[in-house]
Amino acid sequence: MTSILKRRRPALLSLVSLAAVAVGVAGCGGSSAATSSSSAAGAYGAAPAPTKAAAGGAAVDVTTAKLGQFLVDSKGRTLYLFAADTGTSSTCSGACAGAWPPLTTTAKPVAGTGVTASLLGTTKRADGTTEVTYAGHPLYYYAGDTAPGQTTGQALGQFGAPWYVVAPSGKAIK
Image (cartoon, rainbow, N blue to C red; front, top):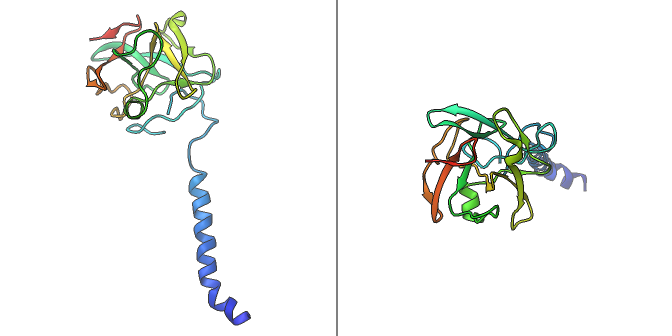
């Protein structure tokens, strides 16, 4: 029996090591204790991870760049509206939401400097999450934006309609 254990010990140690690495990697995923806002997997270039602002809700701020002043999240990621959305209901799900992740929240959204708090709201998505709205428009990110303030999704016609950066007034910047 001891000779069998000695022969299988390296294989057993390899399995235990692999399991430990897998657990360690899985533990490196998103953090629910983050203190900024966004919606859907982490770094720029990927869908943003759901996080919370200090007050518990997603924060919406204003930045200024070549398109003028427009809405961003607390990390500076540009927020867009989808021209196909009518009212506060989102029409973007599935593959659309993969390319254009919604800005979701777990509490009342927080208005940053330059944002009109009374224009902030929320809507329930078909998947049960709560999406932030502004002036009645559901807000989205563009997965192709890879840095704060980027607007590579501006005026793209995808999933049946164009996407626009949102001005502090709540209107699309065209």
